[in-house]
Amino acid sequence: MLIRLEIQHFALLDQIIWEPGPGLNIITGETGAGKSLLLDAIGAVAGKKVSRESVRSGCEWARAEAVFDQPETSLSAELLADCAFDPAEGSLILTREINRSGKSLCRINGRLVPQKLLREVGDSLLDIHGQHAQQGLFIPVTHRQLLDRFAGSALAGPLRQYQALYDQLQALTRQMAALGGDPEDRRRRADFLLFQAQEIEQARIRPQEDALLQQKREKLEHAERLSEGLARAANYLSSQAADQAAAAELLGQALAAVRSLEPYDPSLTELDSQLLDLQAAVQDVAAELLGRQDELTVAPDLLSRIDSRLDQLFRLKQKYGQDLTQVAAYGSKAREAYEKLASAEEKLAALDKTREDLQVQLQNAGKQLTQARRQASDQLAVQINWQLTDLGMPHARFMTRFEPLALSQAERWGLDRLEFLFSANPGEEPKPLAKIASGGEASRILLAIRVILAEAEPLQLLIFDEIDAGVSGKTASLVGHKLRDLAAHTQVMCVTHTPQVAAWAQNHFFIEKRVTDGKTHTELRPLDQNGHLDELARLLAGETDPARARQLAGSLSHYPGT
Image (cartoon, rainbow, N blue to C red; front, side, top):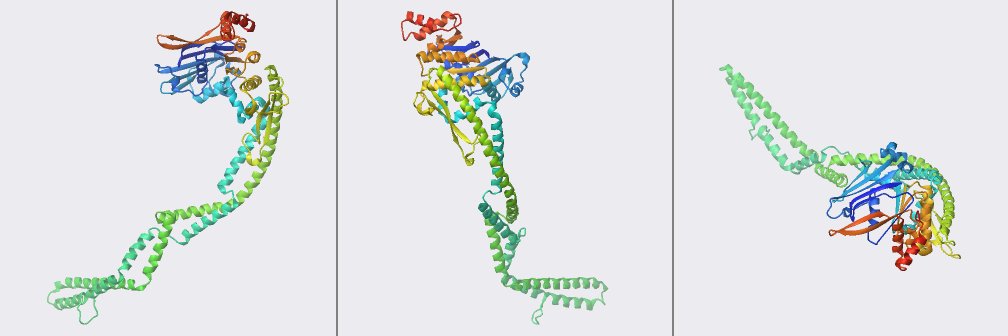
């Protein structure tokens, strides 16, 4: 149980040390004294969300620390290991510090831990039912959660089996979708990929082909001018025309003249050799020029063919990439994707058979899960109706309505949706809680469920903030009695304004605001027997005179020693 709570600089709670006792701990006080802040501080130390506004004005940080005795009765072995709990220590200390920026530090037994771990530990140790908790009863999705918590281990096996099959089916469905689940869509996709791959493959793209063709095109575009120039240059070097002396002929004449002089000067032989080389080189260049001229006249339609090819490559780049390298890569990927889709038919056929088998198994597992829930719901209805009778509603009828889901609507929690139904009066058919239950009835239903769950869940502390909302008089006394019964199983804290509820306290605490030096402080102090009676009289004073209120307080009280 919670044996100590220390709060510092938490809004109006400047410095509070609270040591609740076992059983039913009642907290009363004037409206606005800080009772809800006390619950917020407990929520903070249990890992709940907290804002920087929680830090008291003028302070840089706020702190809440709770000490729980014998945590091993509530925490799983895994959580105890995560907390590094040593049984020899005997207690678990949860600490939460919030600074002015809104950041917080979480500690367990002095060791820094993630907030997620603190929240998991807090959820296993305590449960807080705030002023609006009964509104959750009007939301059908919470009904399944409450029923499953009540069913406990009886539902664990069927639920685990169903969820394993559900997860397998979901994974299989995603795998089939990746392969192309719809046959028609798959065929269209395959045809399109094949068209793309073939269009690129049949083009037989060569690296840098478009650049090379563009260069060739520019050359061909000036073919006539090039041809005339090449012919003229060739004629200058070597011409067959009788009326034109070309370079080769002039070099021949120079060579003949030198040779005629060699008998008179043998050293001219070297010049003979040089002139011969020059003549041969000029003839070679002339032949090269004539050869290039011939190339320009070999294919008269070459320019149009180059333009056609460049146009084809341009269209491919428009569709598949910025350059020919990207186009070729796209074609390879399209071919690969096509072959994967083409081979998917066989895979999909096998997967489809597996899916059919899983669907049958899931359907059966869903039926077993629903059957287990129905059995648990019958037991829950019986117990809640008993509890409601104890809470002054002898004619109340509580039951659960199940709505089966088709396999296509399957959820991870089962093949059913359920909703709690309620009837407060005889002769009325049970209807959804949201339509007929008043605030007082919802409070009592919530309390009835909480009493029942207390035996199934090993929580150390249950906290109720005005669970008596909407009830008064005898009914309020029944609520207080039920809280006292609940406190026999676990430690209970209840914030209340109702004297009939407060009268059942086993430990009574009074919270009040005080103003000192212009600053507001909240104090929480335990009440002895006289203080308990005085507080009951205060709560009753609005109904009668102080003397009569004190007398009524004495007759109402079940405080130890009264």
